[in-house]
Image (cartoon, rainbow, N blue to C red; front, side, top):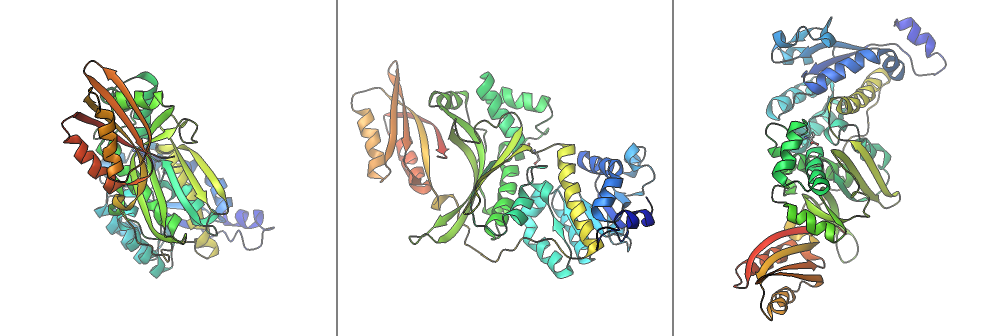
Length: 450
Ligand code: HSE
């Protein structure tokens, strides 16, 4: 479409339609990069109208030009293995980073920002580890840094915190932000599969990577929790600040016990404020761990590989966002939304609201957080054991909300549910119980969110 036709079409909208092209450099052409390129071409006329000028892809940087040169989405577009030269070109306005990893993309994104280019990245690990450095560079250069796709792909949670709730007070964010682990836990609950069987199925279907460590150990969710907490609480929270426990120890027995008590186990990312006696925020915490939630909790019905984020804000109340949290097209959708935002700002001027860590609350770890616990132990089945073991909780000042005993032969399963207690106190009790002569084994300790 010509510059003239953009101007004439937008003639009724003062301020729009100056028709200036926006040059884009794309770093990476994996699943997401290829989909971004395809969608830019498919939606080009609509994007031009929404931006007020055409998007022009100046080049795509890949590590192996030979491997990609015949792909349909790069025909007529320069392919290069020299990313640094591409991003500093004068005719590049916005850089899209979809490479993955941390060190190399960090260097490229910083180079781009310092050269005055706005950046759109889908890289959660990069933002969670170095968000502060990148935001500072964007501020210094007066350009945009967008990363909607870094958290739950197409689900618009970063923009929601950045813009929609910018005037509210976010109190708590809890969410299922990893599709692979949600698929595994859901498969265990719905088919009775073991953890290993469900992981094998997730790998077969392509949800889990060949090395699923970042998913099953909770690291992927922890990066997303760091970004959500930073945006929600206006405080820098990094990956290293997030306490993290994955799902590798969850057994079919845990899933079964959850079902019997009308609960579901989900891997939740939880970001919350801690309050002082006057009700003022004294700190914030972000954590990831398997969590028992009641079956009527809004997150309990999120099945398969779907993601959902539940936000509680003072004025807005409770909000929930649900959808595809991974995959080429959903991630590309989020990248394109950011690209339109950054490109509009290049054409019409101005910057998007950025992360602002002015509140600067202390970020505390697990030990300071109070939560409820479900402790499952195998104990000797003799008179007085129940009373003696439950007394250990009372001695540590942890009160109990439910105790259940199931006998089988000369052993019994003792299941204890606590009221809110500090993580460090609970760990201390579990440690002492596991050494008690009547406790054969502490089978599981799972936190509750209710
Ligand atoms: N591996 C992630 C998931 C997607 O399973 O949700 C990318 O963050």
